[in-house]
Image (tube, rainbow, N blue to C red; front, side, top):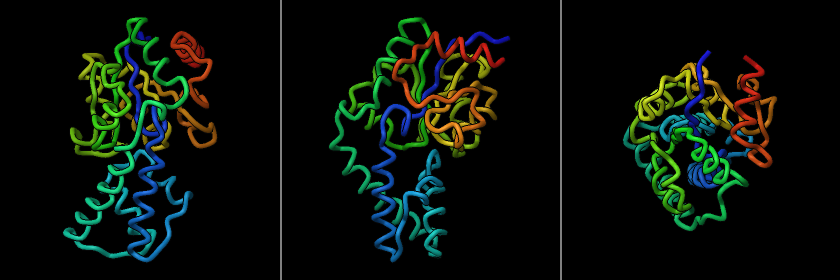
Length: 221
């Protein structure tokens, strides 16, 4: 049995809720193209790369676009998104997430970020938590979007750990699937019904310690 030595965190929905800003950006783009993007539609975009998300959004609106238009749409959405995140502060870190990571580091665990976002470093800097991570792998460093395991495998490599020694914290079905495909244990953050492929599912980090996570994972081996 492997020994857990690393924690790998998704960003959106796990450490901070930038998903709401992604949604506002995509919804604004949809409106310019003549249709509405509902919260239910937005569930399909969680954990998915920018261009893959754009394809989903366009399919929802039955919009056909060439490569040049797609690049323009993606750039416009990202500009709107950056307007929103530029106003972020440390107050927007999800409850107990930063303290959980700090305690994890203090116990000797290696810590990585594995996010589909191309703006991870901007967000971490705005939240003033970049120093909590030993490695950051994001959308600027990977070719394949979740559920492909690439981002998680690169995170494990950056931590100098085998995948089996890592636990992924994810809030999206695509991310959970990617973690499982990478051969890592996975803690879902959210609703059990939506994250049933995870080893365990938590509502959040309130009242949770790294030791509790490791004990629960050991109990489901």
